[in-house]
Image (cartoon, rainbow, N blue to C red; front, side, top):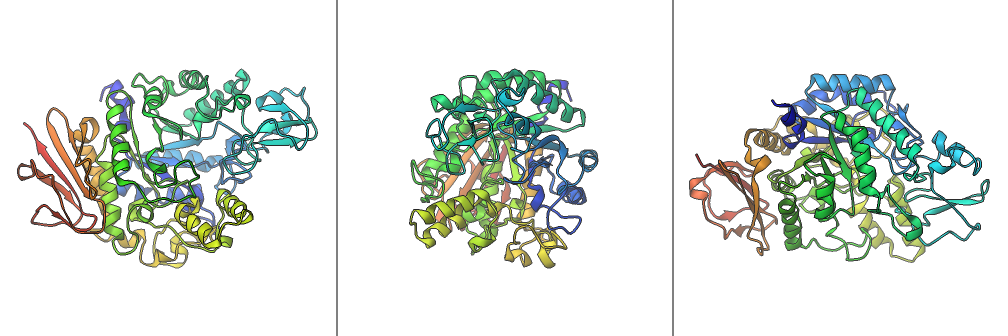
Length: 544
């Protein structure tokens, strides 16, 4: 393999995201940990993935489940030790798996030593590591609101100033305009690179160049200048995978982030498709039916506009999103069929697929009482909407549909108590359906959702058309089918998915008679043009 090809290893890779506190507990305290992940590396190798994106395990007060970091170069005791982290990197390598760290560079915890110093006085050397504005108590500098609700400004009496925070009040934003801040960050990244990590996911990276006085929180003027400097100082020194989380990304912006020259990142997470099932101009909690034709248009546009000019990340789920089989599939009558269909639809596209823990099993959303939820965003929304007079049933409908805790319930390993996740009391309630929906059961079933994901991963590695083929949307105005063609010089592939639970006739009938059926989630021997509920097929032809 050439050096250049090796640098692009991530184009054929499949990434698995682990939310550590919910993956596997090894010591009975009810919280997943690093030793637990090490214990499950064989499972991940059997699935076939190439790398693990690890949500933050750094030292943290855990106000926002680890996305509030108090020490970037140490591990929080709830997850283990720095030695455990080094062991994980080394053990994962033995299973042909790289570890991708989650970097939170927009903000730190208010318990980070930098901020503790910063709020002592305006003259403190660390004061300018954060964003401060003069004002009077009770009168914030402007009306900017935090992403978790409330004002984005917090008063500190000691210095008689407000600091800026786009998330929790315990997550003050770092001041990227300060070169010292940037250099501290680069030194930390290089330190992790020396420990052998395979890459980084960069949390809300499009917010680092904020200009709050101008009401700019995303895509600030110096954003790409900062990212390119960071890339030169760190990432470009090794064959890493880097992915930026960018909620405000357009295809044009994403082409800059994922420029093939490697000046910024390997790719970005964009969320245009994920925001389709909410009322326009409203919050994610304001539910709306999925506009299916719009979904096809959005995904097709990203496929076409980044072709040979950037790179897509492919995902349905992550730690911030509800379970896709409950969201756009059918988690009751056709759970397995719809989970497989959604997997086929996504994995046939160009880009690097991300599997969120449990997605490969078809894990579902949970329905708890509000007292059983743990997510700060969910609880803040519930409180605010109750105060505004929203109906309890409407609020809970939003929680059931969109709460981040839907993705954070413990991994369902087997049918024993607490799904094999812990011998203690789990930090958040286990979804009761674990008795029938679990990894142990699916690994023994050749027709399981797990087996489907294994097959898709193998196909992606075997056929080049998955990696380099063009994309053409088929049946653009069809209200039942999501279909597309992928094609390169030597191969052609057609993916056809019945997106809904009714039987439907597919109007696209070209080429099939001359193509091999690579996969069908119903395993039908005789193929016709009538598709069963949530049926998904992949056709393939070698040109020469």
